[in-house]
Image (cartoon, rainbow, N blue to C red; front, side, top):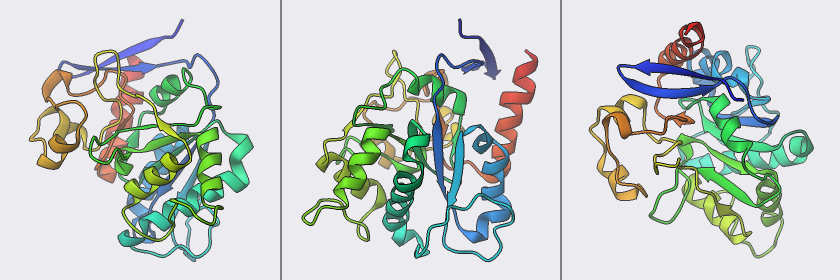
Length: 266
């Protein structure tokens, strides 16, 4: 029997699963930059990142890693315009060095907050031997929104890397928007997007922060791309929420404290 704590924020109730129905091993790959080491990066490491079974930060070389688990990846080009390269190198690193040690592979940003127990509970019901990915899916071009985080099964990660080895491939390393390019590569290799919405059709992965989803206003780009017409208030999000995006580093600590320190006392 799965134990559940109910934690209410002004009558908004989310579920936190105390125990996972199966042991799910998750590797988290979090994009960051040296200028954020003392703020965003440290916040992720100190909060939800601790609950990953493996955690690596993906960043360009730095002489002062400050005890952070930086993935030893060479030749990462800094800058937002090079995100595709950064993610491709991260996933190739995961495949080459950690493929057999984990069941699922998560890509996130340093301003993403992930409720890892809910992530693992959701993934425990999925099959990592299938070529599947999960996340917030845009109905335009069908890509996985990177800031909300997305997850690849072991089979999906294998096919992604096989795609990058082919001479005539849809898998590009240096061009385009990260979300769109990663999805194009996955699609070309037969990786499908699984449904991560709950039984009420509410999203589990969220491209915005909690306040934006709950209170609004909802940006126009979100309305145009959302598979489900967005609503605010109590039905904005799944009770088994997995992620929010655009979470400032200080709010990462706040969410973590409310979720684990105060929630565990209930």
